[in-house]
Length: 342
Image 1 (cartoon, rainbow, N blue to C red):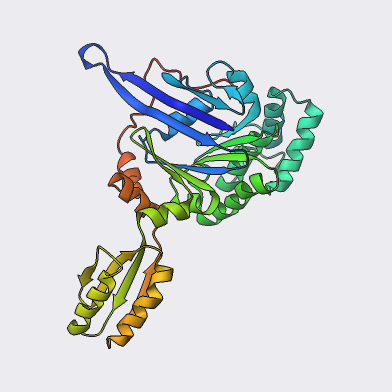
Image 2: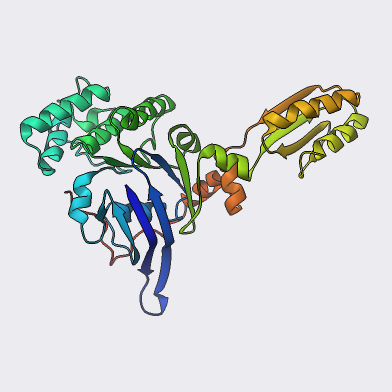
């Protein structure tokens, strides 16, 4: 569904002697198969949004090629737009229009008849728990309702590929969980391929078949969440013992299966690959050595651990820092900021 090779995007900022190049995307290669749900992770400024804008034909790449739904993004932009659904981070509804009219108008822009757009729109309202809101304006909806309306607009023409850009940003926890189920149903019940950008690690973990991490304009990892965690971080094993003498024994025993053991008081910690298989043997060794544990905790690595290992920084920290700094991916004055609807 998506194939990109050597994507490059360079922006120019400033004028005269102050003019400089900002390399937002640096040779991105990307493949997404039909029926996949792919989570696209990266902090602000990593090239995530720029890559998405290229794939949705809102921005022409400086170099490289990309095809989406079988069409070239540079030379067949209209065909790409007709084949995809796009839910932008900021939404696309007009707050002063009726929700049903917005969805129908969007469908007609894709060549649907008004009758077909109304029927499909009402079907989507039922599926997305928007019953009774057909004649309500978005400005009078909750955040979760507006995001589900954005998704309805993206799905009105039954696209085979859906781009969701930060779909749950700003929602309360309950609304996020509800929207997760709707996103999962896109593939399970409608057979859609989903390309999801998010900075919520738990969201990517819960929804995506595969995680793609971009940093400083380059893809640094692409695999299932479980494989990334197992290969990069390992499980954290935390042993609590009773005495200083037992600390020494526990440190040596844990050190036989972990290369980064640390001691904090009576706690002995270390990362162990596939700890579920290794810990039973460790417990037997400790018992045979006379070590009685006060507690043991095994914590699986998170996607943030993966990101920290791959890039040397936490994804959460990077996101927080970027909020106060203009993104280098923001288009300069000579780059168009909006694309036309199909």
